[in-house]
Length: 95
Image 1 (cartoon, one colour):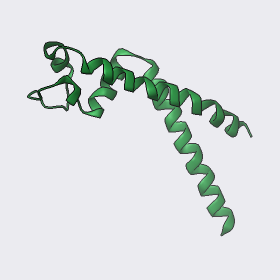
Image 2 (cartoon, one colour; image 1 turned 60 degrees about the vertical axis):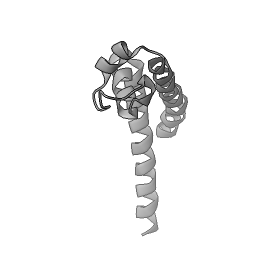
Image 3 (cartoon, helix red, strand yellow; image 1 turned 45 degrees about the horizontal axis):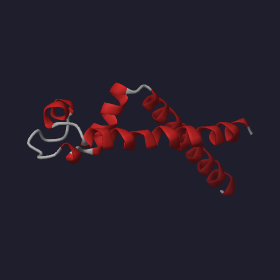
């Protein structure tokens, strides 16, 4: 029962912290190229616009600039592990 309570609490926390990465992506899109290109790790440096940044770079920048992004990781991992555990138990009980 406690696992379901944590699951229900993790859903809104995960969604709010996940949506924050979209705000970071839109903020990066409007930066001048001299400011955004040094932040690129996986995105090639020869892209024409800052809005062409790869999603993994947005995620890494979010981790570096905002610690709430770690909350997204932790709650997302809990959700996946909890659901996987529940599926595993239901399959095990059917056998």
